[in-house]
Image: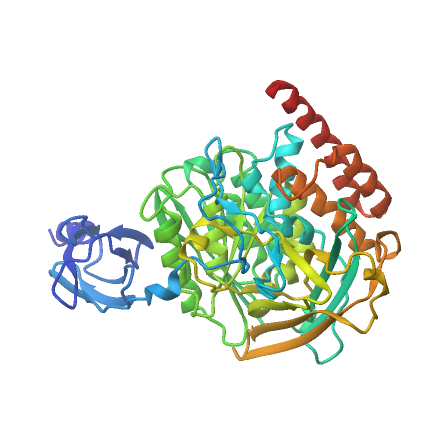
Length: 578
């Protein structure tokens, strides 16, 4: 009899019930409730704020979070009613409006662009136009190390498909190649250089290159890393180029972990759970095995998964170290908050936590590029698209320091042009979202720059005196640059001034990297169907690129083959349209 009641007691079920309210005694709907013993996420009711959770334990712990409320943890007795009160943590709405990538003066925010391809979604981008220097001598733009646009475009072209114009972010195309690397001097955070040259697609204009290089951290002395892999294992990931690719990518990353690094894994597919508790980088086999056995199934509760990943990252936070959530997904969130605005709000509440966010996009026909862009930008992080295993190796192994170890946040550049030299100018790329332009406020959103990264910005300019332009003194200043940033360790606002002098040289005599950047710009503008790019055919772009690239560089050789394939795709497309 004693044995019978003992077994009955062990197997007995509790039903943990309660309600989540705010400080005004109003129910909090759709609150996220993590049951600690099961590492599973549950939710408060959609109309009453009440919840009910089955459990085997009489005593347990809950972690409760909700938009605009402070996250709390409580110990509970499972057979007692729980009256949980959340304190308000309202974010200043003005600080969370869509921010500009660059400051512009002549665009029409009501222009309409196609923003999707099949079930893929892309932001509606409004291309930067020309500014008259006498009227608008100042401009600015955000610097970042996102490179997703190029590998995504490569995926379309390799499949024999035209690229959606809004999928093209020309600055990402150029900076994918990490061109003109010129490390700063010892003790300096950045090195800035400029180059003025002719414009290959318009003989009446010039190109001004602005090159920013971040310092390279010594990988052997990088502080410990706290990494949370946030892996989408929902049903939409059940394809060879999705979850299997992600698994292979993370396993390559794990091989380079140090003993001082820590890895946790959060998965979401049907429900959210902590798949692997914080584990030392010394236990590589354990981490890799946890990744290997992942399977894809269920819905996509991405919102709750992001909350849990940040909770884990903050719980294992390493002061002075690298703390980063690495989200791998096709971006198809279909449970909880799913819109770009809602995800924007969610990540904005976490951006001051010291935890960075890297987004790895995969898949085709279902890629939510717009969502991943939102998450990476608001999460003080970066976004890469993995179209194959080689790209995974490039992002997580070969260029790991650039992508995962930041040296500066909130990096942006203000530029003031000299009207006596520059009549008008146009920033190529760094285009703005339609929503950001409609707010009509000049608020730049700074970007993140990683260790050893190189960023190129290109201005298309028209000289004030076209006939005598090349006779201007080399000491004359074309533009003054004012770059600001925050160091990731101290968080102090710092600045650098730089004068871009008239160091004009013909295109065929400048550094090869600048010529390659010109070729990639033409490629991007052509794919984007830019109204600022003349009717230069694909053969013109190919011939210029062939003379410019380094034949010993695999990525540059591959770029040349993409031009050839694009020429066939768009030629066939034009015939169909005719």
